[in-house]
Image (cartoon, rainbow, N blue to C red; front, top):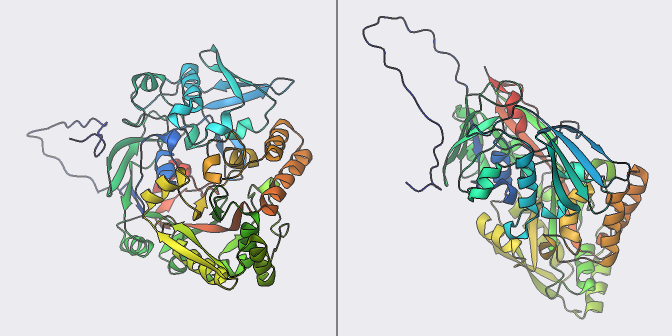
Length: 504
């Protein structure tokens, strides 16, 4: 059997009892949760995951050193406490004891060192590598203590230790080359199987370090559309789903629970400044001035979303009015085009995956109609999600309509994109010495007010150069059966709090 198609790791035993008469007890309520998803996961390596579907599923299986809570606070994960030295150049982590991986092996400092060093190795193409680049060495102090020695003071490093892309892996798995082939985490659920295009099955982890998990199994079932997912919720064959289409969310009846959560994620028209004609700043500014973001929210999102600037991190949020053309200005857009050498307009390609986000096509059509008023023809390249991801990572696009995840700290949100050494700078298409210096200043300062000044300057450079066209942050809707209790939605998009949920 192809291991990628079905990796079975749960032993099954049965006891046969013969010749004994008994009365069967009343059947208990099912503790098997089925989650409807429109996109399948695309890999089993959590440190390389970029797809929302993969991040959500593997986020229930793997653990990170710290976690972001419902109030967007940093709380203990596999590290129970931490402290910086007086210069801010060393972070000491005290690890949780009696934690086990899915295969029964113990988690300790050796696994932390191996996991972080794997992320830092460029050969592994870890998604969050740039967020950890200030780590110059990882030292095992004792079995449950680790020091992260930093090249510069970095207050943002703590926030960088949260999430699936910073998953703690077994050092034995890393040494054996098993990461991405088998799944072996410390999370509340254990991986059972993946049937590509169909389902991912998890079972509760009886040795999980947190409170006892109440759900017996969690199955992610791939369903073609959000309307079909809602039908399955109404029929009871699915008990949980993340809905991104506001029109579908409005159809949710009183027979279901609906949680409406503002997202840190954001929708943007990404402009690849390393490809013509996006290498011309006046073309980029023309695009920026031609777009009415509030109109995009109104027409594509049924009004359900918030117009944003580059930074969505709550403590450092950009003011969307601090940009050239905070409102659409067609005359100015045409003037920029003329300055760029396109007085009669131009045609640009834009890659979009309708399956990536429920309203992606509607956003594309809204942008297309608006840009046409300025003489800019948006030639839409419709691709499937896997093609989008591969081309996106290769920066094989002129422009793309992308739904990107946000973070609670601007450094972990954008260092990987907009610094010259960022592992996703190829995708971003833009960096500068000024941005490098500002990011260094932002991460090295523990004063929130001074950090805000650095990130405000970063936002200004990104906007004044129309690096991307930041559009809006959507709402996410978690829709569940009324029988599901104890679930807490997170603005990060994580489903980790299913570890506290129950089916009555």
